[in-house]
Image 1 (cartoon, rainbow, N blue to C red):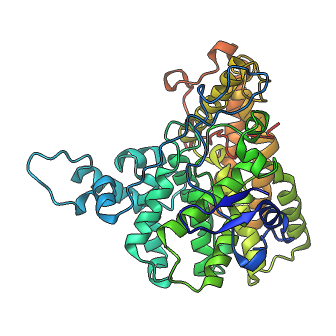
Image 2: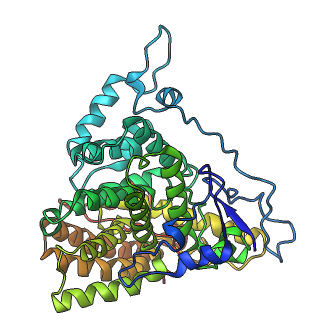
Image 3: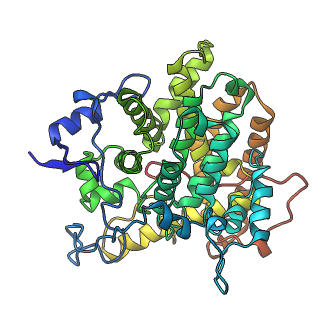
Length: 459
């Protein structure tokens, strides 16, 4: 049997059968068993090629992925070099005459002002990313860790923390229109809003908060910009590795664990504690698999119907964290229109790029990926109707409902109506929405229609 090497974590190897055993031992509440000796298999970061026109063989009938074009993996890991590369730490670098500073004091001041309002639902993550010069994810996580006192509570080493967060942000693909570090920052900001919900906030432990924020930040790390069916039909090695099940989510999780171990962020903690944290991170990230939507929704609905959720139980809190992360991942239609519209166009652009790639190589075009047949409004209406509304209706019930939940549902319903008007008011060639062509937004604004998750099974 073939063996898989632990990335930069020693020469430990596991047989495929052991890896599969770890993958399938899943408890009812979604937490994963560690398998043999409590040791988790992890992958190498950036361990597979970017998905672009160069990685498919010209004999498209076979749809096999070439191994020749691999992303160069050269990381700036020392803290000294990271300081010079990171816009977050730009002010720590000694200024030299004539040097070019990419982030001046004015921008830093505006970014700091925005962070003071990071718990508000109309937080503009696109503006924040510009103000931090593309460093929104690292900046946001550092701030939230300080807000919750997680650095002190877990005795985290600041050098290792910045190292880890830099790795996570760097391993998102900036060329992806949607699945990039800005999306991760947006999901993290939404997760922070949900962690502050009165129904939940007082019950959460520091570990719950740490896991929730970490999972939100890393839930799509190293996403290739295509979905699971594409990886399966092109016989990508990740599809084979994970036996065509939760392929991307498993890769996101294992990559996160690899970065945790490479950075040594949790190395000072007892081994059983760090291993448990790795497993719980996996359980949260795997919950974002859109193909498991009905599974989680049914369980959530039953808990609410039976009124048997006890947030003093760690297992119940973990389940709610899974639901909260799922909500954060697909919350774009619940944002104000201007933010939501941008996310909608971005996710559809990513779908269309995949469709163009499939068309070029005579592969079957995946659902939602045909720009000639699938308009942005039509995609968003289906996404809202089948994925977002059912989930947020139950979250609305869970919060009893909170002011935030009422706000989100209001945006969601206005959004759906707006996409419906746009769908039937324009010809197919006019379905790309431009600010100059938008109708005036009523006072209070509507929500947005974004697309989250991996887009595999959205009707």
